[in-house]
Image (cartoon, rainbow, N blue to C red; front, side):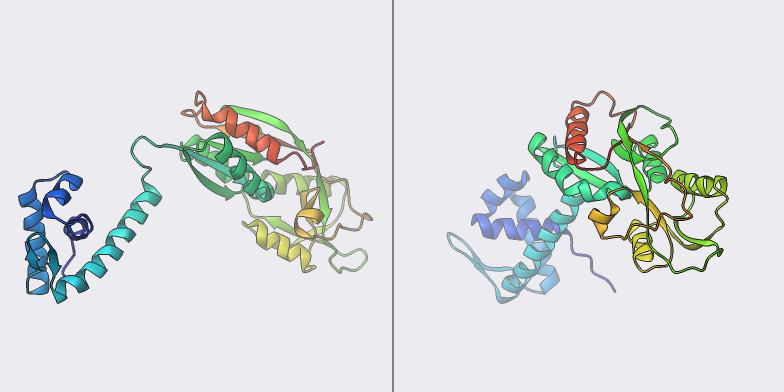
Length: 288
């Protein structure tokens, strides 16, 4: 048989002890003093004995009450931590942003600048492929997203410029053999641009690695599994070796860098501040 502890009863116990009385606890919890007394009595039923041995001028906990208090403090704290993670404080503003994984190294600077410009706004971050982030913006799950893709954004958006791309990785493959590639999984507009560039140059190719995460693609390229097409400062960002130029066409791009906006965020006073933070954080990236 399961017994579920009610957090409001445990909070009543913690508040009574911390404030030193039932009346003060009732005022702090915005309930009546009899309600607090009833919650403490209900806890007494749990431990099969009184919570307090004295409730006069000086509160004294029973042995069982003292032990329960330790659990109560931990449970109440964990409850408040979980609620704070998913429910912004009453009246608090929240801004949810997405950042395409190839530009995620700029996130610490983006967040630092956002905190400086919007110190009272709770910020949530999601990273991933541009196509996935754009869908989350369209559905309202994100307020805005920093994208890197060749296809136009369907909804409201601001283009920040165009990013140069380059080839990375030096896989071992024989002359005339198909070029091994490391690619993002579909849907990915960059993948299609890579394939189109190689096909147009009549370079034979094969997929040596594919996956949805940048860390896996980078690892595959660094391990020599295949060639990857990434932002042109990939050697500085991740220590990737630049690919040998022979038998490779020009890298696709440059690709538009775009901030896509949800319909609910277009008039938000926070969006211009967020866009300035993003632009400043990307100032050292290889724009065309």
